[in-house]
Amino acid sequence: MTGLIAGGTYPFRALALFLRKPAFLTYLFFPLLLNVVLGIGLYLGIFAPSWQWINTELSDFNAFLAQWEGTLPPWLGFLDEVGAGLGWVFRIALSLGLFLLIGLLLAQFGTLLGAPWYGKLSEKIEQFKTQQMEIVEIGPIQEVRRAVLFELKKLLLLLVVGGTCFIVNTLPGLGSTIATIGGFSLGSTLVCLDFLDSPLERRRLKFRQKLGLIYGTLPATASFGLVSLFLVSIPLLNLITVPLCVASGTLFFCDRIWPKHFKQQTPSASAQN
Image (cartoon, rainbow, N blue to C red; front, side, top):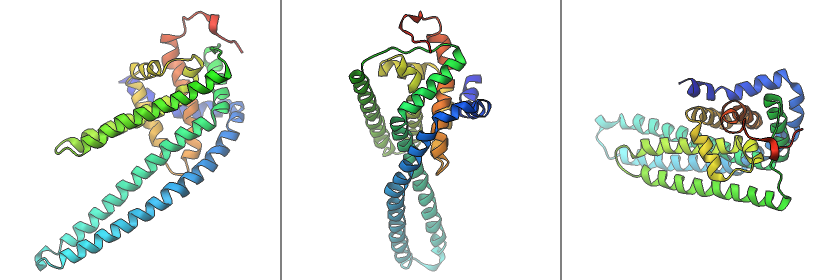
């Protein structure tokens, strides 16, 4: 239970760290600039047309419902209010889904494009927290190859688990509930992979090893992932919370993963800065 509560506090611990150590903020200027440009593109390219589509579809639905209600006896007139209420429920649900999708995309592309600055920030935080910092050196070609494979494996995970949730959602009974839980679990896993990746990638871990560490640190990673997912889904505020969650991922690693799995390793493959 302690881990479940503590995991969700790390974004706020990162904020406190920035307030105590303003020098870390120097690594956030270019990532924040990238997030603003990327966020504008995502909101204009995805949210605006999707919101227009939602309004058009709901207007057509309301017109159909009004026409259908005209054939009913007067005592069923309350269905007009029921239909209007359902329309707003669908509107809110679809809007929240759009915010969640844009938040995930902003986290995915924001961390990828801002990787050089986030990586340096993560190094400084790890050195500050652990008084050492491990880097397994590899060539630039291999580093690019690992980055591409990492993104492809995340995409495969999204397609497999997301597709399964979509199929389960069509099942009667508990299908929608199971699919919703699965969807949030998938989103939490993806943001954990993104925000914990800097210290894990410095050690050149395999994708399965990264997943193993994330699932092996439950329930703390569950609350960390869900809080991070919520923060990156808040419109406009997520332009700031993505860098915050990247920093909090390194803090989480230093507190909950490094002591159990890496503290006792010999520094033969480490680079001290």
